[in-house]
Length: 138
Image 1 (cartoon, rainbow, N blue to C red):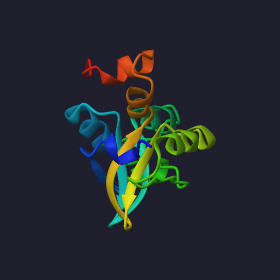
Image 2: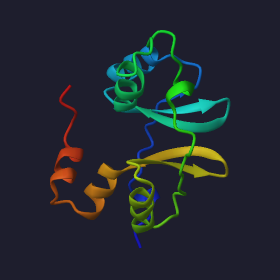
Image 3: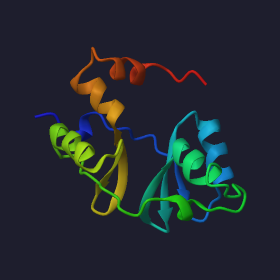
Image 4: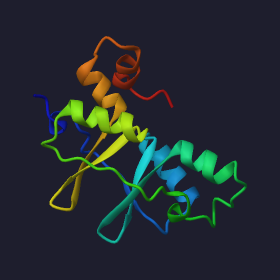
């Protein structure tokens, strides 16, 4: 059995739920990433992606300098453990139509697993795996 912990990402960027969309977009640009984990104190409350900023923020005509991550973050967070089976993580993503799962241990964020991570691990010859394994082009 391959576990989530064998291939999860541990280089995480977290931001407070009260940070603005502009701050999150700048952090994503500077870190060459497409998502940030949103926290409220020590509690993980969601994930915001570059697509969320575009669709839930800009396209909804929200002011990115005044809109907070809390205002666009989905509250139905699905998480996994580093000891969970990779197939089970894939099934969770399919069931809940999510592309990323925070990896939690004893209530603490320790990693993130994405659909791209799973593709690289489980289907290394797939187009998604090929794209996910490449360095960012931005």
